[in-house]
Length: 509
Image 1 (spheres, helix red, strand yellow):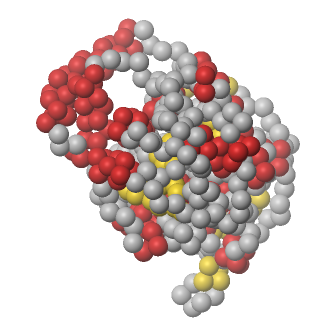
Image 2 (cartoon, one colour):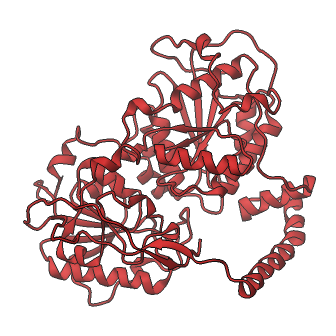
């Protein structure tokens, strides 16, 4: 087994005495027998597939201790990121991984990747993959690698409110990384309710680290003449928020109005994928298709790394993209649009009382928010000293060295043996799975799945679910005359605390 080299000693003997999996050591079975003394070097491999998981996985991996030997591989799935998307995702990595931006790894099928891990097991694998693929890979590693590495997983970006599917697909991972104290509490509560032993650790979201040390964060980015400028209002598009075409067209209308109102700005619709490229979530109504022919010339559609757009941004606008945290970390004013309400399906509940909430009027007026200190500690901007994922990962690797790593129980309780596994594999990999058993499982399973979906729809018509309660739209214009920061010349004003009126709404997710 090849190992990297650490720059300083690690007290791995003491670490053995610290529980690392929320008490999971009392269940399951030991993964292997003791195998001699523990080496000091550590080798960690990340597996990625979609655009957002590639960006998150690479940047979390880059935050590992300086002496660790790091590697990253792309798994071939129906939504694997393109080479262009990977180059964008891998911007700003440290020296151990910076080569990935110029030479992103070619996707390999699951079997080839797992075989590489079996032949030369690393100390740990970061499973940064979309849910069904993550479950598949974690299961394959458990089944096929006796000397299995520690399995770490997690979710990119904002993960509040807690999502059962996120837990369900990653229940067998040894460690599940989250990015705020609020998320950890919510996921622990949901896991316990679902019968899953909590295994959550805290890490600062890679994109929420302060960028104040970089020149571009304070002075802007050079234009064609080499002069540093800040002239862009950047809209961070999301593939499925909002979901409906009419709502997405309305967002474009607001951006058009903003561009007309402020000819001195470039209003940028920043997309995550070009035509034909896949994303983590499906996009039925791409924003570029909704831009009218008579849109002003200063409204543009661009892709590329978000960091480069923020280099020249005067403000960041979104519904709920993680990019808003990237902007806040740089001190760039931001706005989370609440015109469609506040609720789980919009992924914007977390921003209530953040100081960033606003509406289309604020956007067109050029009024943006700044993060309230009272919100930051519990939401993504906790002190780095609160992070425990590296310590807990190290402890788990020491347990593995000593033969004391415990296999966690899966959340999936369904039975079906080989054919069931073939169905889950086909469901995860789609056309990337070319096995005969997979096609057989599809022939048998597809009609059953269709029947179940139709039955659920029929039950919903007969007995509609209770409406999801969401908060009403809000704005930077608080009652009593206070407001947010006007980028176009107005002074900074505080945004007063306010109660959110509750209204009924739908949750398609």
